[in-house]
Length: 624
Image 1 (cartoon, one colour):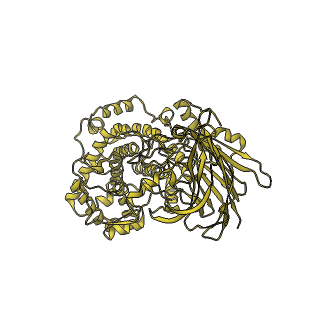
Image 2: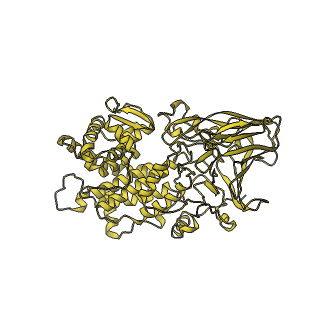
Image 3: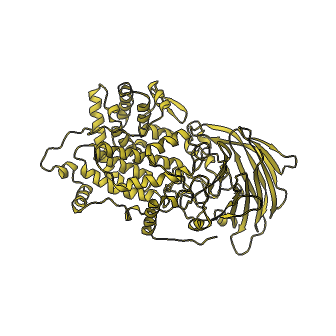
C-alpha cells in the first residue's frame, strides 16, 4: 500500500489545469485500462475529499477598476450608485431572453398542466398543496417546488402562451405564502439561488400572463431575492448551496438593470465557491452523482445567461464544466444510467444524456480517480464501479452513506451487483421510515462487521466517525489463460477503532470481462490481534430481474439475468472463519432513477470471524 501524500492547494490547482490541457492523460478510450506507469498516479491513499483552490490559477481577470467596484459593492454601495452615479435608478425589469439548452421533464410538465406536481413518481395536487411556512415536505419536494425547478418542466411541455397561466397560478400561491425573505425552508440559500436563476431564465413564462399586479409582485420578488442573496451567499458554507447562491447573484447581475457591480462581485464569489465544492479530479466533494449532474446543469444555465447578454463568462466556468463531466460519465453502466451512490437512485440514461448534450462537453469517462474515489474498470461488456474513498465530510453531504469498498457490476445493459440507493429520495415512493436504513453499510455490496456501519450514520443526512483513510493500489496483472487483468486492492480503517480490524478488499476483473475474483480480508489494526470472535456478513445486492438459484452444497449460486445471460457465483476458501459460514438468498430492494423501489434479492455470506483476522474469497464467472 502507498503512503499518504499531501500537497499544497496551489500545487493541486496547477496540476488540475495541466490535466485539463492534456485531456487524453485523464480520459482513456472505452475499454482501455491504465498502464502500469499510469497507476502510479492514482495510488496515494484517499482522505475525506479535499477542496481545490481553483482561485489560485483561474481567478477572474480584472484591473484595479473592477477590483474597486467589487469592493464597493461588497461593502454595501448600491449597484446603480456605482454603475450610474448621476442617474436615477431604472425600474426592475429583465433585460434579455435566455435560451438555455437544458430541457425539463415533459411528463412532469404535462402533469403540471393537469393540476399536479409530479415529483419522484408521486402526484401532488397543486390546488391542495400546502405552501405555508409551517409545512414540512420531503426534501425532494421542497427542492422542486421552492427551487422552481418545475418551470423547466412546464417550458418543455407547453408554449409560453399555454404555460403562462399555470406558472401564474403556482407563483401566485407561492408568493402569498412567502412574502418575507429568510423565513421557512423555501429560503434555504441553495433553494433561493436556484429559484432566482429559474425566475430569470424562464422570465417570459413567469411574466407572460395577463395579471399585471402579479407581474409587478414577481419583479419585486426577483429584486428582493437578489438583494437577499448578495448578503447571504458569502456566509453560506462551502458546497453546492453556496455555488447556487452565487450563480443566482451572477444571473441577476447579468439580467437586471445596473447589474455590472453585482456581476463582478458574484463572479469572484462563484469561482471561489466552485473551487471549494469540487475535488482535484473534477468530482464534487459530496461524492454524489446527482449533485455532479446538478452542478453541470447549473453551469450550463448560467453560461446561457452570459450568451443572452453578450457578456464573456470567466474562463473558470468553462474549465470547471469540462472537469465535471468525465467523473459523471465514469458512473454510467452499460445501460447509460448511473450507479446507486450516496443516496441516489439509478438516474436514467435519458436524463444524463440530456444534461451532457446541453453542456456541449465531449469527452470520455474518468478512469484514474483520486479524490472522486470511484474506480471504473471496463473489460468486454463488463463494467465494474468500486468505491475506494472515504464518505464525504458532513459539511458536504446531502445524504451521506457508509458505502466504502462497495461495488457495482454490470454486463452490457444488465446490472448484476448493485447498491440499494434511494435514501435521498425517501418521502416519495421510497417510504420515509426506511430512508435511514438505505444509508447504512448493509444497503451496499460490501462487508459488514457486527451489523455496524463502517462510518456512523446520523440524522439529517450527516455522517459521524468511521472511515478516515482508504489506501488503494490499482495495477494490470498477467493471469494464465486470460488477457491482462485489472486488480484493485483497497483497505479502510472504519472498523479499526471499534473492533481493532481493518477491512481490505481485492477485486480482479479479467481482461475479457468474464470473471471477477474477490477477496475480503480482515487485518488486525494493532501489532497483535485481539482474541475472540465477531460476526460478519458479505452482502451482494442483485440487480432488478436477476433470478438466483443456490447450489445444492450452498457454496454457490446461479444468476440468470433478464436477457438470458448466466453468471455463476462461488465461494472460495476461507481462513480465519470461526465456525460454519453460510450462503443464503435474502430479500432486498433497488431504487431506480424515478425514485421507484423494486423488490430484488441479495446473496449474503454470514459467519463468525476471529478477532485476530480472516480472509474470505469468492468469484463471479460468466458462463452463458
